Length: 170
Image (cartoon, rainbow, N blue to C red):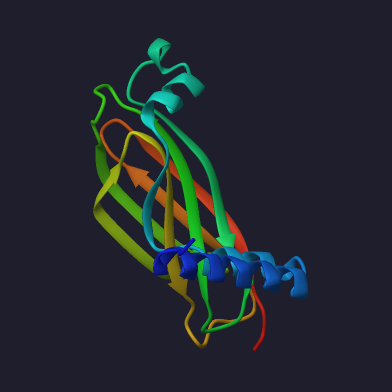
């Protein structure tokens, strides 16, 4: 059976990522995850299933759950790019209603903001979504422990979370 080029490319990418993990071990898992992701929001679970998972019919709506946050890989070198992913679930008041607000992303080192971004038109969407972004560290980033902070504010939903990662010397 012939496969469309996109399927062949994704299979080849997946096979390469699995080979990389098998060859290099656990350190490569974050690199493999990063290689398989693209920036933006991706629907993971439809709203009806999320509503059942969280018993949304008995909750005050909109009902929001921040499910997880990842930094891949969690150890990088100055000038390297890494993937930041967070996953959320939203049960809206109306089936297709979104919750718009401001999403701020900051990277801190020794308590000081090194990088920051602000998206004033970010939308939380109904269902379960993964949000991926890719961040490149400055070439002169110092070795140590860094924090990636995200904060979302709107009239109805607010969250803030932080994850740490390490920067190793070049």
